[in-house]
Length: 508
Image (tube, rainbow, N blue to C red; front, side):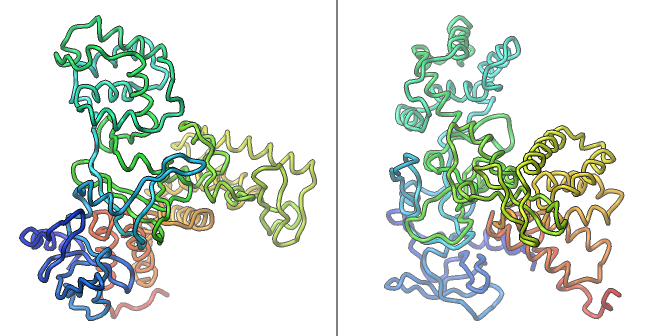
C-alpha cells in the first residue's frame, strides 16, 4: 500500500478509538490506533496498541504491515494520527516544553523530554490569524495610506495585525501579545503610528467595523503591539497576513536549529525535533529561509539584523566560514577558507600555502564584486549566468555564490538540457551537504528532483533511483512527518521503483 493509502486508512480507523487525555498526558488502551516510532529507521508508522505497560511507560504495538520487530515503544514515541496536525491543549504543551530565563538571550523555550529526530514536540494553535477578511475596511484604509506615503516597515500587515488584536482578542489575549519580546519596550510612537491613528479616528466608524474596542487606543499602546507583531509573528502561508503563536514565539533563532516546523490543521504550528534532543535541551528554529542558511556567516548576520540581535549560534561562532571556499592560487587543487573575524585565510589543505596580504586583499575584493554581480543576475538570461559561472569557478570552489548560480542553471536547463541540469543539481547537493548537513526541505527536494531526472534518463539504474528517493523520504519524514503529503511523494516513487520489474538488465 502507498503512504497516502496508509495515512487515510489510519485516520479513518482512529476516529472511534481516541485515547483519554488526563492532565495533558494521553492514556493508551488496547485497540488504540496510533502512530508509533519504529526503531529500525526512527520513522513513525501506523499500528494498533496490543499491550500497555503503565509501570515502564511503554506499549506493545502490532504494526499494520505485520513486521515483528521493535514492537515495544515508549509512551513519548506514540501519537494519535491527529497529533501531527491538530493543535494540542495548553496543558499537554506545557508537559513537553517550558519557558526559562537565560543569561544572554532572555526567555527561551526548552524541552522537558528527550526526542528523536522527526518527533513532534508539540502542536500549537494560533493566538490570532490576522488576515484582511477580519477587517476589510481597515485593510483598505491602511493600504490607501501606504500608497499615498509608504510605511517605514514596507507593509501594512504589522499595523493591521496590531489593530485587529484590539478588535478580536480579550484582555488576556492582549496581555499575551504585550508580553512578547520587543527590542525597545518603552519605544515612543513613530510617525506611521500617529498617522494611522489620526486616519482611523477621523474616518467613518465602519473602518473598525463599528467596534468601540479601539476607540481609546493610545499611540504608545499601538506602537507596542506593532513591535510585538513585527518581532514575533510569522507570515501566513496562504494569504497576505500574519500569524502569532504564544509558545512558539519563545523559540530563539539558530542557524543550526534543533527544531523544524510545518503547518497543521487550521494554521496550527507543528514543531518537530530536527536532531536528537535530550531533556532540557533548548528548542530553536531558524528565523531565516532555508536558502539563507546556505549563505555566508556575514550574510546571515546581516539578515538577522531585522530582529535586532547578533546570532552567536554554533555555526556563527565558527572561526572559519566553510561556505566561502576559494581555489588555491598556488596548487589549484586545494581550497582556501577565510577566517570569519579576520581578513586572513587558513592554509591550503593540499599544498599548505597561504596567500600573502596583497593576494588576500585581491581575493576579498573579487568576492565582493562577484557577490554583487550574482545578486543582480537575471535568472532568465541563462547565457549571462553561464558566463559568470564559468569565470567564478576559476576563483571559487564550495562557495555559496556558486550554489546560487547552480540553482539558477538547474532550474533553467531542466526543460531542455537535462544532462546539464542534473550536473548542477548534483553540485547543489554536494555544497549543501558540505556546508550544512542537516535535513532541509531544499535538500530533500533536491534529492527527489534528481531522482525524477535520473528516472527519465537512466530508468534501469534502480539502485540510484532508490537512493535518491530514500534520502528524500527520510529527510521529509523528519521535517514534516511520515504521513505528510510532501513525504508521500518520494515514498510512493520509492515504492514504485522497488516493485518495478526486477528482471530488467542493468544499465550498460
